[in-house]
Image 1 (cartoon, rainbow, N blue to C red):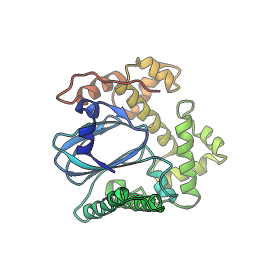
Image 2 (cartoon, one colour):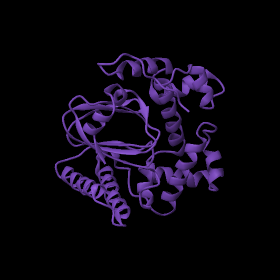
Image 3 (cartoon, rainbow, N blue to C red):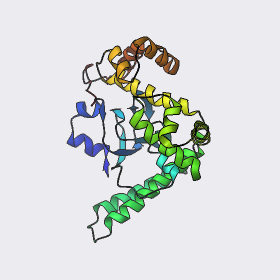
Length: 284
């Protein structure tokens, strides 16, 4: 547990506002003030009650202004085993920001206060287990918020074969999205039919398996265009496109902009007012 104020005292503003990746989960609840927060080149305004979840390897950039926030950080292996629905919240293609209502905000603040108190308490042998259970409460609250939002109505708490298949599909997609975009290849890897995989995607994500695959490829393309200086042809090869023209057509269909225009537009919008236009980094 930490606060945005604590981070400011430990790191220079230029580091906090530069694009960077985290290797752990970060849940941030804005408590007062205003600012902006960007995840994978999508920037949103923040105010009291804004809840943000950054997953490992997502590219973030913060423009805090006078914003104050409570921050919860944890590794992928720390949470207790949860149902398939919460496994999906670990997905970089899922929703990552919400504006809490008056009835939701006190619930989050209450459990975060309990977490902070337990984190600071001397460990008497059960402290880690208590923290894990309190974190489970936070994740369940996020799941609840995600499900009641009208614009995320398809996000449920999946169970049974469809939920498990979709979770395995997303795990396989993270490994193979640069080498294949064919639904048939993923069905073969998962030892299921393309029809079963499509049904699972429709039931859980509200879209087709092909759309889930293309969304993941487009996400990586946006990351590379904005946060690296790789030529567009190199990005196309990195993502498995044999011809840069095919990559351009794919990107145009998904983002409604040409890759070069997207890069220029996103970089011009992502610079903090007090910094110059440097600070890009290299992807591993």
